[in-house]
Amino acid sequence: MSQRNTDVTAQASYQALLDTEACKVREVLDRVGGKWSIQILVDATRGPVRFTELERGIEGISRRMLTLTLRNLERDGLITRTVYPTVPPKVEYTATEMARELYDSLVTLTTWAERHRLRIAAARDAYDKEHAAART
Amino acid sequence: MSQRNTDVTAQASYQALLDTEACKVREVLDRVGGKWSIQILVDATRGPVRFTELERGIEGISRRMLTLTLRNLERDGLITRTVYPTVPPKVEYTATEMARELYDSLVTLTTWAERHRLRIAAARDAYDKEHAAART
DNA sequence: CAGAATCCTCGGTGATACTG
DNA sequence: CAGTATCACCGAGGATTCTG
Image (tube, each protein chain N blue to C red):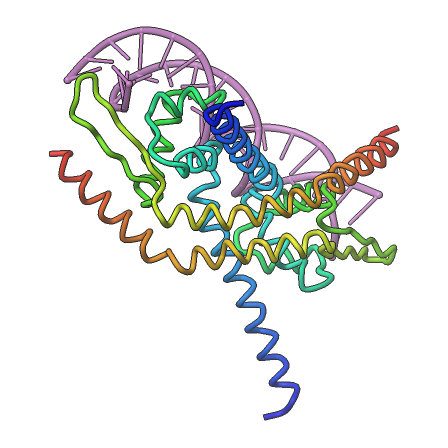
């Protein structure tokens, strides 16, 4: 087997690796990429939270979207739903261990955002200015 | 200042911290959460890539979305666009250093997905089965 | 080759009202 | 309190055609 062949193979598998990585990231994003998922996950991470607590704590969320997002997170095993058969009813949501680990991963993203937020804003301004000039 | 007051303050700032974290994650997601952003970023990470290369390499992407996503990534300073004034025209896209760091962060998410993909699938099956039973 | 322009579809989201 | 049900909107994304 020639050296060249080896290189090609290595390159192809590197390509496959990158594609796979992208695919996996998409998988995660499809689950927690919703408009409210992260916020709910974060709130549920610090312990049992009731439906109305979430509704009041998350600015701008509608009752409908809160319900839908909670259902999806529960379906994926990221939060647990506990119903207390009292009257009036009481329901508590808690992040699972899996979700807590995910949160730790998300912190890495936060760090990135922290480091580059100014640079990104500057890039946007520059791009917009540059592009506005061409609009004459 | 009472101990109780201190606790409340600490709790409030912890809350604020979590909210901020969620906000920052959203910031990142708003930039690379699009359907094709990650894949493009991944491809552009391994060096200069031409428009048509991307179009052929990314299954299912339309010419329109490729253009739009590239523009947004360029605007945020995540990729650089280099035009070679030849005929026919040649344009190369490359991930910036900032984007490469982001990619490293995304790998963390990949790891999480890897560890929990089976568990999530199982949770879904269980939830769906459970819920189908209630539909009678 | 690398787009720009146009039209259209569809699903995620919001607003509102009702209920066990 | 913790939802469900229904309607309506809007913008991300797709298909197609045209051009420097």
